[in-house]
Image 1 (tube, helix red, strand yellow):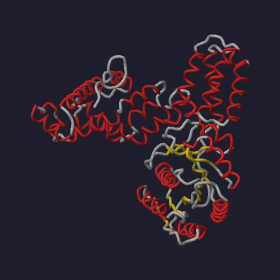
Image 2 (cartoon, one colour; image 1 turned 45 degrees about the vertical axis):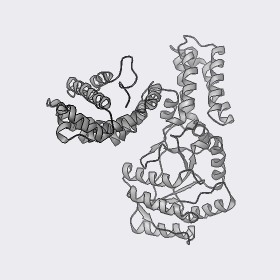
Image 3 (cartoon, one colour; image 1 turned 180 degrees about the vertical axis):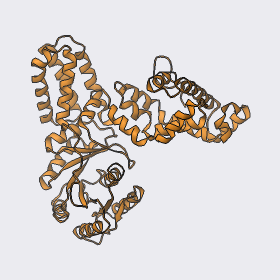
Image 4 (cartoon, helix red, strand yellow; image 1 turned 90 degrees about the horizontal axis):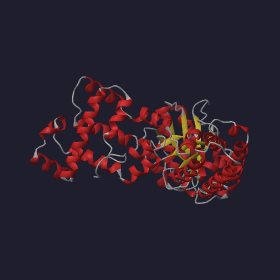
Length: 459
C-alpha cells in the first residue's frame, strides 16, 4: 500500500535498532522515540496526535511491562503496535444497517475526493459480501456528468439506479428515490451528494436538508488521503455540520504519506470504515486498524491476503488443477495462463508480497521489476499459441516459435524464458502432487534466482 511505504520504512529501521537489545534504558528508548516522532511528523500526522502517541508509548516503555519482559525489544515493538491501533480505532467498525429497509447511506465530501466512485464500490461491496439489494441515486444537480458517471458505474456493478437530472431539487430527488427504493424492496439506498471545491454555507445547508429528509443510518465522509493534513481539517468542518458516522479514505494506493489515516480518527472521533485502494469497483477494503498497524511496522497483513484469496481466486479452477496434478497429468501452458490470471486478480505480485510479513522490500523490488507487465506479456505469448501448442509445448519448433513471437510482439528470448519457467513450475507441481503449501513454497524458490529476488530475466 503506497500510502504507508515511507512511514513503514522509517519506523521499521528505527525500531529494528531497538528490538534486538537485551535491555532497554531510558536513553535508547528516548532515541528511538525521537526517530518515531520524526517519522510520524514527516508522514503528515497531526502534531497533537503525535505528541499524545509518543507520550503514551514512552510511559508504557519505561514502565514494568518492558523491564520485566523476557524480550524487552519485542515488547517495545508490541507497545508501538498497540498504540498505533488505538490511534486509528481499536477494531474494524462495519456499517450499521440494522434499520427497516431501505437503510439509507448518505455520502458527503469535497469535489474530487472520489465520492461517486466510492458509491459504486460500496454498492458492489454490499451486494457481494453482505448479499444486499442496493439502489443508488445522485443528488449532484450541479454536475450532470456526475449523474451520468453514477448511471454507468451502477450498471457496471449491477446496482439499481434511480434517475435524476439537473433541473430537479436535491431534496425532491432523494425523497422520490426513497419511495422507489421501498417499492423495489431495496435493502440499501446510497445517496451521492454534491461536492464543492471548498467548504461553503450553501453546500452545508443543502446537505443538512438532505440529511433530515432521508434520515440516514450512516453518513459517510469521503476523504482523499493524498491531501494529508488538510484532510483532517475538512473532516472536522463536516463533522460539525453533520452527524458523521464514519469515514472512507480514498486514493490510499497513491503516493500519500499515511498521516491522514493516523490523524483523522483521533481528531474527529469518527471511525475510518473503508479504504479505497484503486480505481476498479472492487478496490474497497474494510479498514482494520490492527492489520494496518501491522503493515506500517513491516509485519505484513496475512489476514487480508487470505480474504483476498478466498474472494478473488477461482476455487473451482484451483481444485481442478490440484486433481489434474494428483492424477499425474502434465501442468501445461493453459494451466500457467490460469495461474498468471489469478495473480492479476489478486492485484499482482506487488500487492501480495506487500501483505506478507517482512516482504515489504520484496514488494518494492517486484514493482521496480514491473512484474505485472511481465505477467501480462507472458499471457499474450501464451494466447498467440495454438490450443495444441499450449497443451504440448514440445511442439514448438523453430518456425512455430517465430510465428508465436511475431504474433505476440515478443522476442525468441522472451518465449524461451517463458518455456523455461513453465518447465520449472511443472517440476514443482510434480513434486507437490497436491501435498500442501510447504512444498509449494519450497518449489517457488526454484522460480527465484539464487539469493532470492525476482524471477530470472526481464520481459
